[in-house]
View (tube, one colour):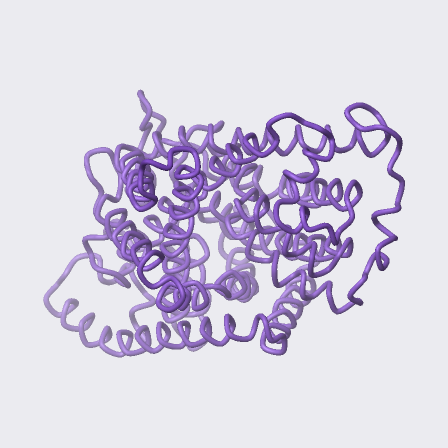
Length: 505
């Protein structure tokens, strides 16, 4: 963060909001490039960020979890994906506005810290870290299950351990090695989805590999477009909303690139077609070609479509694609969790060691802390799957909605600050501000309320709220102690204390 305090403006209540200078990064030789404003190496190339942005919206949940959504809403799941996709587009537009003005490894957590207060940045930052640390265990277990099916002689826990070790190693070497792995992982996912949509679209119109045109029989038959009624659209949203988590990763990764502002702008501007193509496009192919209530669709919709078209080795091909998606999610999850931990360490909301970097410009301590929690959670996935591990899953399940809500409130405040102090940085603008921001907040609150109402989502929401309240309470307790610590440091002449205006309340 440096000894020179950044420009600031007043926050409600008289506390200033710091506005971090845009990191420029000096491109260097080799894979690591220059150094970002955060002290991390700007080692992600444009092609890395482009593929992270494109592939970031394609999670393993799209391949293996979409069947449950189709079973719950029928063809109407298209409306569930469209509404959720619209929500993500609006939230990403708001996040992009702030990230383009001030790229940082803490992304929305850092913006919440400035706009809403230190308690907000602390709470949402740790909840986000918790979410991705649990995801590490989920993805490691899923990858191990696939690999054990191929090589049953190796125990499943050994595969999970091996996968975690390999991807931890790639993250520790350099951010460039993370970017390279993610580039190829994401590339395979993108190619697989595009090929699937092309093959499916040809079949829909009666071209090879299909026979005759399908028409709308599967969309309007079998109980109609909404066989379970309009309320199923909301039920479908609850099942698909969390598969969109990951769209925001590019705003964290952008700070480790030579041109973060351009990277954020490109990612935000392309989010509409990415969601429309990969999610809505591929799901439309599934529900058009096959009856929504088919058992094969509920179990594995993508495999079911390919097998219905007599595509050879469809199951094996999709296993490879799903494994790639799982490894991609694990790789980016470890990166994301470690960068959030790094940012929390920089802001004094986590141990200072989290904010240190090794010779490769990588926050090694933050990576080890994140992967350690992931290892423990993975152990629970085998020893206490229905108790402790289920609790971890449920208590982190609604974090996506909390993150999106905090982004909305942060953007309401930060937009006015940016317009007043550094309007030249407002290169990405939220549409119809502030009314569309208010509408987005209302929609997120409505979804949260529906989760409390819905029996299937209630437990997840209640436990997630409990987790959020616990983290918030810890943050408030620590915040009360900080004024005394800050005063003592200022009296002792500690450098850099004044650079954190949020500490003075």
